[in-house]
Amino acid sequence: MKVSLVIMAAGLGSRYGGSKQVDGIGPNGEILMEYSIYDALRAGFNKVVFIIKPEMEEMVRRLCGDALARRTAADGSPVEVAYAFQDFTSVPDFYHIPAERTKPFGTVHALLCAAGVVHEPCCVINADDYYGVDAFRTIYDELVKLPESGRATMVGYLLKNTASLHGTVSRGVCAVEDGKLRAIREALKIQLYPDGSLKDLAEDRSLAPDTVVSMNFWGFAPSIFPALKDYFENFLRHEAGDNIKAECLLPLMVGEQLEKGTLEVSVLHSADKWFGMTYQEDRALVAEELKKLHAQGIYPTSLRD
Image (cartoon, rainbow, N blue to C red):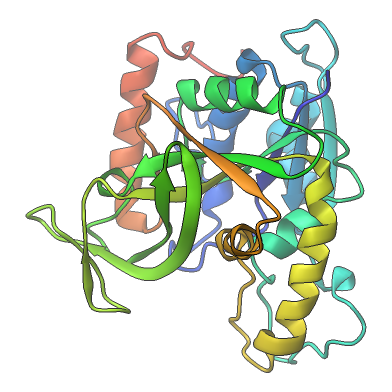
């Protein structure tokens, strides 16, 4: 059975101050998405799709894509590698793109750009996050039994493990009941304080440390693409306007599907700790965490051997 890992890597990493997707942070210069690929392949995934800006293709091929295409999946088949490009050519003609706009339109737009190459159940992730070995095993087991339509899945993480002391982060705050996602809202300015407390500054509300949040670790059937297309076009018609920073986000799209009753989402949990790089100050901590994982034997000396 074909199951794909879809990596969203076209973002500019503006808060980080550079292209964090290709920052060699592992002990041997590994980039974060190499860990996700390594974990996904040993979990059973046999296809990897990179969503990138067109000008990134040569770099991504050189860093990991070409070597990945020579690897074998756990089922003995060659790993299939595909590329999808997130740029303005995929934006419908009815929308006038502001001249000042340079950033892509967010995660819904990103996944929609991969519609032509994803024809199987898929796990969708950020390129600049570390999700953990167990998370990929857990979602793979769910994806192989996912029905063709009406169902999706996600791995949820605890908010206290996903915030940064170095600035605010945006998270999809989840309401979960009986293992199902009941609602999700995007909190755009969550601040972690030294005493461990958390606050949504945009709405001036405190958040419990064990609040379940989405880290864009989604599992979808390919039947999700028509809904993505409709949601993105409605976003362009009614919300984007001339806002050069407006983003069309997967958590909000899933939330709308939940409200309509057209999608049921199971919420999975992972024994692993998430970490990622939102700000440059996060880099040293992530590098140290990866070093520990290699030392513990969770990863080999080098992911590139």
